[in-house]
Image (cartoon, rainbow, N blue to C red; front, side, top):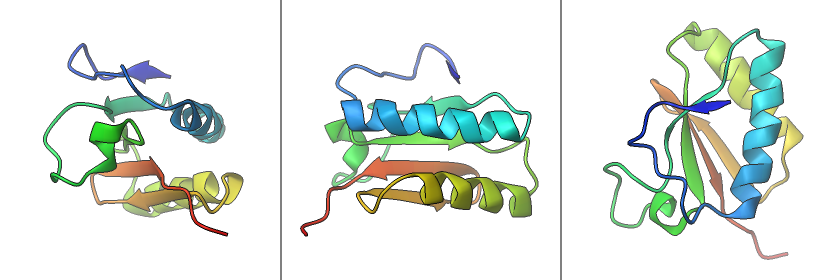
Amino acid sequence: MRLKDSSVQMQGVRSEIIFALNVADKVYDTYGKEMVITSANDGNHSTTSLHYAGCAVDLRTNYFENDVAREVTTEIKNRLNIDYDVIFEGNHIHLEFQPRRR
């Protein structure tokens, strides 16, 4: 697991996201790829984005074919609980922690 470059800001990222990143890293490893975090608490996102609250990250997928990226997304989602959203957004995987009321 690594950051894309020094523009990726991990300050303020919640522990639940760190946990999810470790889960995702294991999934990437099973596909023989290094997981790269392309955005965390940085970049340009919608004003209501959970990135700015430290509850979301984006993961690189450009070395996967789209069908494989979808498989990776599904595998990550299956290993996490319902408090996480894991979405393949065409050019990256968006992973966010958004607790649900039970």
